[in-house]
Image (cartoon, rainbow, N blue to C red; front, side, top):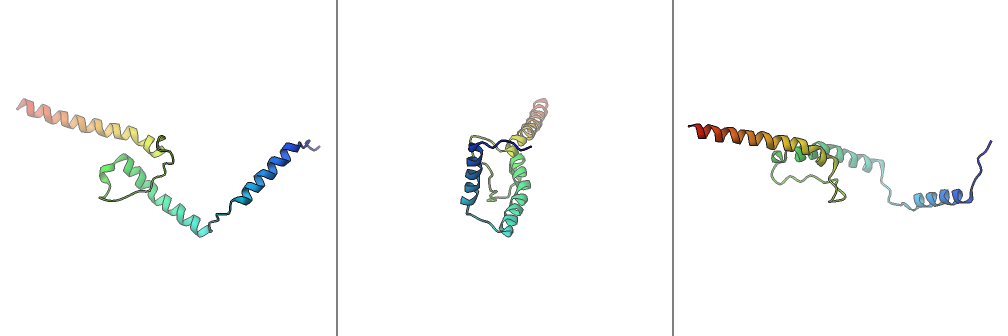
Length: 104
């Protein structure tokens, strides 16, 4: 049994085909592999930069994957709890130092 074909379905299929043909910016497999390798290498650097920005070397620039500045990346969202924990630990250490100084 065959499904009935509506005229609109054929037109949308043709449109999709035309859109695919219109995409002429081709990359070689080697270029794609190189871009993927660069992105993979920087993934851990982006995580490290988001979670521990003080560990970055001076002048080191990590390419951003953020397309919309109003929307944080997944790495930025995931790093928020560790940043809050790190700040809480620093505050506790500072509080302990202040308490030690006050008792002297």
